[in-house]
Structure formats: C-alpha cells, structure tokens
Length: 423
Image (cartoon, rainbow, N blue to C red; front, top):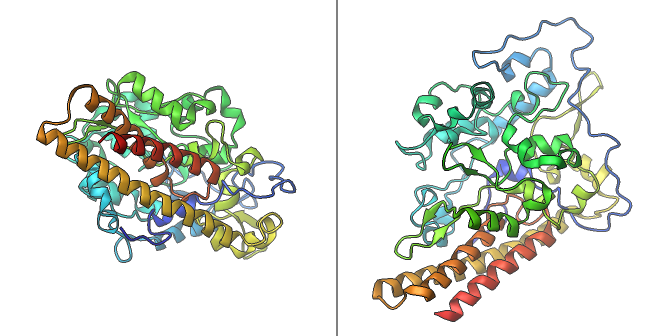
C-alpha cells in the first residue's frame, strides 16, 4: 500500500486546515491582539448599493464582487483546485481501504476532492449518493441549504436529496462564514454552535466558522438532522466521542459477515485542534484558522485585505518569514517530519486492521467465531478502526496536533493488537 506525502488527503482541505497544531518552542509566540473581522472598510470610500439576496435569502459571492473586489478575486482563485487530472482515487492508492470500508458508501467511491468552489459538483457526482439519500448530505455543500435549514427548521434535513439538490446553485461562499454581513463572522450551521455550548467564547470566531464544517458529525436517527456527538470542548476528545456513540448504540454501518457495528469518522480538524485535553499549542495561544490559511494580502492601492484563497501557510513564504520563523526556523521540514511519522503509522495500523477484518470474516464463515468471543472482537474491531480513522481522515496528516495524533494512533494500535492476539 504505497503512499507519498500529500496524496492522502484532499488538496484543498489540506490547504484550508494544515498547520494550526504546530508544536515547538512557542513561548515567544503571541496571537494577533484581536482576531481580524473581514475587512469592514472594503468599499467604504464609495457609495454602494446593498446586493439583493437570492430566493433563499443568500447574497451570493457574485453579488459582493463590486464591493469587495480583492476578496472576490482571491476567492475565485480557488477554482484552480479543480477536479479531474491529478486527483487520486484513494481506493486504488490504498487498497486496504477496500477492506476497511467494506459494506459502506466509501467503498463505492473515495476520490480526492477538488476545492470548496466545487462542492455542489462533488456531491452531485459522487457514487456515495443513492436514491435513498436525504438532503442532510448537502450540509456544508451550499450556503443556500444552510439558509434553508435556518429558515424552515430541521425538517429540511429529511427531504429527499434529489429534490433539494436540484434547487442549489451556490457552492461554499460568503454566506457560510458571514451570512449577509461581510463585516462580521457568523456561524451559519447552528448545530455546531449548539455543540460548542458554553465554550463558544473560548474559540476564535475565525476558527468557529471553519470548524462548523471541519468536524465530526452524524445524522440524528429520528430527525435526520446533522448533529455533533458532543457539547463543549472537553467532550470533543475521541474517547468521549466513542463513549457517546456507544451509549446511544450508534453505528454508521454493519461490517459484512462479522456484523461489527462500525463508525465512519468524517473530517475532525476542529476536534483535533481544539478538543479534549490535548488542545494544540497554537489553539491554546489563541490562533484561529484564518491566521494561517487566509493570510493578509496587499491590494493594488497598497491597502491590506484578507485573502480568500484558502492555502497552506507552507505555500506563503511571506507568512513563513514574518510570523512563523520566530518559533519555527524551518517549518517546512518540521511539518514534513510530523507527516512522515503519521504516514508510516497510519499505513502500518491499517494493515493490521485489514488483517483483523479478514481473519474475523474467515472464522465467522467457518463457524469457529461466535458468541462472547465474537462480541469481544467486534468491540475491538470497532474501537481500533474508530481511532485509526480519526487520524486517517483528518486533513493535516498529523501537523495540526502531533501529540494528539500519536496518542490516538496508540489507542488504535493497542486495540487491534489485542484483537489479533485473540485470533
């Protein structure tokens, strides 16, 4: 199962959530005195007419382009991260995934995603969508769906996917982070605000608006609403999330033959950076996502604005030299080292889980594995893949929080080793 760095995750997601967990000698570091709101002064020197919202109540990115031309131009630059050539099919790149995800949607198709401006294209074409899919699959794919839920309530989640997606025209854009006021940051997904609970004031707003989509979630069995498995930062740790799912008897699918109730982790960048007792150093110091991934840029007239091209800070030499260098003399090498360590362990543990799944399947088919022993092995199979997947699908490849990454992989390996010793 060969693998090279930066092939495991989607290019855009790696760009948008790559470095906040940097760990080093950070005593000299200090975050911005105040998390910068979107450029409130943009367009203030001219009288402009407020753009008209669409039928969903959303002012589209196109509507803001004359008022915020620099932000709009940088937003459009994300189109360069296009689908097609150069994108990877992960089921081919990592054959073990065909075993680990057997029996669930990701075994039908798992391709490297294009940029956030292609979210609607991606959800319309993925083979993971079926005739039974619901509108909750559109969560975080369009601000129009966010506005629809906020206006009409949770009943929108349970509508047929095809019926709702046919109405959508706007991919991820301004409304997701600002609603219809670009001078403010506003979390559109209210379920995520509820999940932050009383800790909302402990998280920079620019991390909240990114975290509202870069998190672990599930669909409520009754309402079909997109829901987070926690309330508050302390409950965002993998152990607590697993306990939450265990208590409610939740599983995303049953593994074929063995009937193991499995969980499919989504993209837990926020939990990796801010959650539990292993919050990253950068988060503890007060940095938010845009501080690294939406660096300040200079307009033609010399004024400063926030770039809306979501990129890795490793691709911004000016940021590396001006902000990062005081604590990270060679940040690129440091990140490469973290990622290489994560890469090696993720591959090795995935092979162990693959071996476990195959041995369990063979023995169940042979009639030699049943009863209490099968139940014990199902629990270990579920747990090992849960912890492994928590790291595998987090898009920084270990860079957001190396300590957390190691601890989570340790739990995955301990569980799978215990299971293999029983077979």
